[in-house]
Image (cartoon, rainbow, N blue to C red; front, side):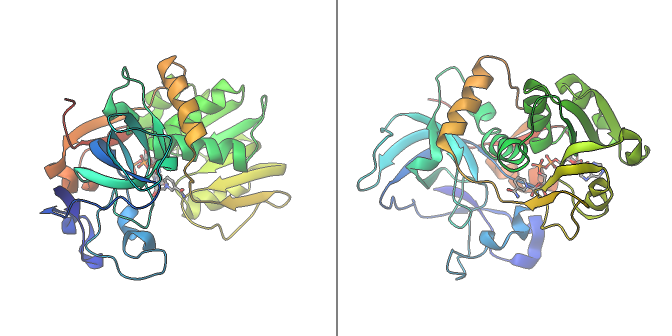
Length: 307
Ligand SMILES: NC(=O)c1ccc[n+]([C@@H]2O[C@H](COP(=O)([O-])OP(=O)(O)OC[C@H]3O[C@@H](n4cnc5c(N)ncnc54)[C@H](OP(=O)(O)O)[C@@H]3O)[C@@H](O)[C@H]2O)c1
């Protein structure tokens, strides 16, 4: 089967190569999915799990990409809950071969059924961004109606979903990003936008929750804005500072079939709109990772056409 692989940790996105790889093995409780559309996360080539299995052993050449939408073509021994021919979408294991391939093996519990009227390219944009945004805002920061949340990277993959979810729950939303991101963030529901290069972050006043996707200096400066009892939740890297009288949380997104089903319902009812910034063929994966042209939302890789 055709797949994108990486073997050299030092080669960066230039090391992403279209290769022939063996058809995957369906382990117990796995399914094999014929991948129609795949998502990737900028920076995933820096994650340890891209290079090693859960025991820390080298697993190169590895196939990156950890979100997908496609069709089940095979069930592993003992797998229940999904059937051959079913449309599915979801999040694949970080430490196994991923979704930038014609076929991939995934634990069935990490996938959710996908309705026939949702495009694979749209569904593939939802698992990581949708689950991360939900878990950050509600599982980790316990965002409540009436609270104020500062969402960094508000036009990006995670931020664009977080803005919509936070507004729907009745929070006051301040989005940030680059100057170009203003219109997108405001259209998604942010009430205020801060251009991180030009505006003073302190102009936003105190907030109950910060959702950080950038880290570094921006995370440090945002921490000062958190009111007593508030939370900074970051997905960039473990924080080195915490609010004076609050919590700082770093986490890695977890698969959650029930939440995926909920996110898909929101999508079908028009309450949630993932932004697909572009759709590129599998052989253009390296240039999509390199992201020469800025686009809001997620870039999706089209792997197979719908039959
Ligand atoms: N821990 C987890 O479970 C988890 C889950 C998902 C993602 N992540 C990580 O979270 C980060 C964000 O993911 P994503 O999918 O949302 O990425 P993304 O689509 O690239 O969104 C990030 C947004 O923030 C903007 N941004 C970054 N640095 C900025 C700066 N200094 N000033 C202004 N705007 C800035 C980006 O603009 P530009 O494109 O112009 O830089 C982009 O619009 C990535 O590092 C990813 O690896 C972690």
